[in-house]
Length: 393
Ligand SMILES: Cc1cc2nc3c(=O)[nH]c(=O)nc-3n(C[C@H](O)[C@H](O)[C@H](O)COP(=O)(O)OP(=O)(O)OC[C@H]3O[C@@H](n4cnc5c(N)ncnc54)[C@H](O)[C@@H]3O)c2cc1C
Image 1 (cartoon, protein in one colour):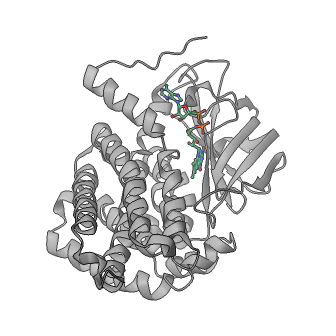
Image 2 (cartoon, rainbow, N blue to C red; image 1 turned 180 degrees about the vertical axis):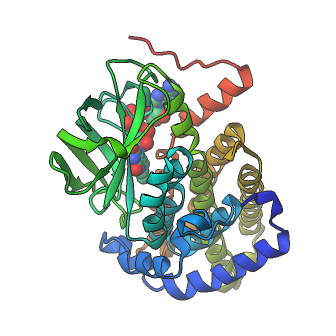
């Protein structure tokens, strides 16, 4: 759906419905998923039953066909209440299903998308490698043709939900090439011989949805699972695959917005209730200025995120707008959650209040989906009209 066709009142109504739904359904156990480091499966099941996981998948493939702007509001409202459930939604909505929708054949779209929309399939993304993090084009995982299959060899790291995923979109090199040449992707299914998943990582935030290592040892993947354009000497596949993750950047920024909004609301409420020196702390100008700065930064982020979600080029967010929105949102959410904790004093530092969790949850945004340093590189490259990320051997 074209986001420019969405009216402000329609979006407000959508937000109000979601706010009530998310608060009723997900707030009670938001701390539990973090504390127990458990995947919020029951929340995923509920979202799947209600059709939310197929929010932007076109109707002809079993989804609701809504716009990327709806997706940003959806991610904001879910993450405002429960960050781990927001992560589940981000993976379903802005993850590999987008790449399949853009790059897949009709047969692949019919095979995968309806089951992504229904929640039966859960996809992970296998891009990062031990030696190729920010420098994605240094990846060495190979997929070489052999009869009716590609033989996959290599290792991936940090695959969100990789230990639970039914499928992983694995990026690999399809020839003896370097740089972006010959990089494409394959859909690998759990249980394929030669595919093993490592133990989930133990991490600081987003602890309900862990990342895991993936190992491929002569794993034969049928040719019909290939997502690639051009041949092994072409950079086209890599470029298009990367653009298909543009919505992921905007979704990441929308989740920051949700977490920041949640922390901000808690800080406002607490400042009205907590008395010191004979009056509520909201009556001190020092607190009011913190709240004013938080409100302003959240508003600026919302404008940037919604701008990125409405200024599309060939169906993808404009790369400059998406990078700027993610960069600003990633740093904003750390400032806002930290100030919200500060307003709660020592109570905010305890695990009895959600602020310490929100501060921890905020930290990973600036790393996943392009670090803030790489986003600055992207923005500078667009400003200067040239890339400075040339490889030095
Ligand atoms: C919560 C989370 C979820 C993730 N999920 C997935 C997933 O599902 N699938 C997946 O494939 N990956 C995933 N990742 C991995 C993520 O994409 C990588 O962490 C990221 O690309 C950075 O790689 P790295 O951690 O190896 O850091 P490195 O690339 O080693 O970078 C280390 C530091 O150097 C900086 N740096 C590197 N190059 C430059 C440069 N040219 N200029 C300036 N600074 C630079 C970086 O910004 C960083 O601060 C996830 C990460 C996180 C945190």
